[in-house]
Length: 137
Image (cartoon, rainbow, N blue to C red; front, side, top):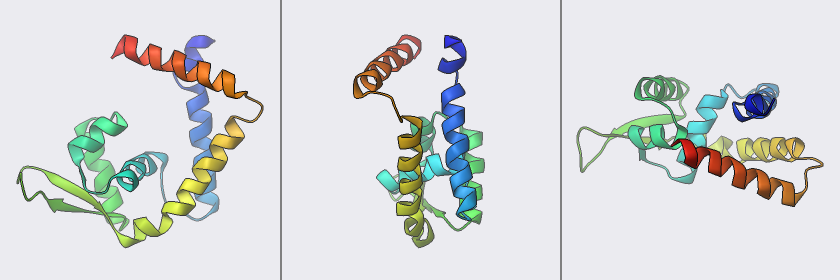
């Protein structure tokens, strides 16, 4: 059972709950797209390679995600001024306008997921999962 939790049962449940909130609010946004926007909201203008590293996705997957975000009017590509081989991904006003709503849904979802879990247990969990990650990277 520990293996199934480490491989994503809890993560999947959280993602499903957050996706449901997006859908109920009429946001045409997938969890994968939200994860890209999340990193751009933290630092606008990241390269596609930076987004791959931040989200643990490969280049083809990121290209599809950015294509779809661009079609939805949430991001735009811009050639880097310092390296023509790089595309920087920039947020549009539309993406900026949904930031607070999306962060609110994410915070609600985390609160729901962690209801009844003590701060001490949360800290133990962070330490254990960080160690699992470090062991395997």
